[in-house]
Length: 171
Image (cartoon, rainbow, N blue to C red; front, top):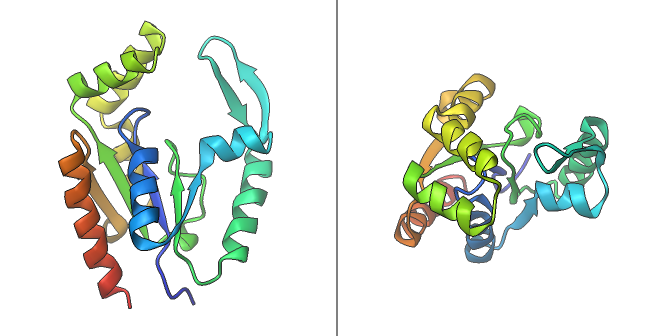
């Protein structure tokens, strides 16, 4: 039995998942696992998608690595951060935090990252059409899901206060 909840922080690329997860980890002394970095650092991918300028991760290799992390931290307190919600077994997660961002703000953030215009449009459309949120709603029970606005740092600070309340209730 975990003494601290595990979190999945998810959302469209550019909404602030890694920033928010890092803030959470620092404030609440938790382990932040940025899945994209894990895939790159441990070479958990099997091919490159040149058209989308990204790697296609190997589901089995990633699953094995995630299971290893979970087993090394039986007390919980893990924050997984990724744009897909089906990478961590439902029973290993206590809360799913879906970051949502205004489409104009997201557009500017992705431009600042020098994303290809086609990739920007694809991600902004995904945010407008709630692709990640709908995926989470399909994969997890409603009581586990928290939707978080991530337009500003003030939004993220407010969300951290909400996380603090969740953590105090879980003791």
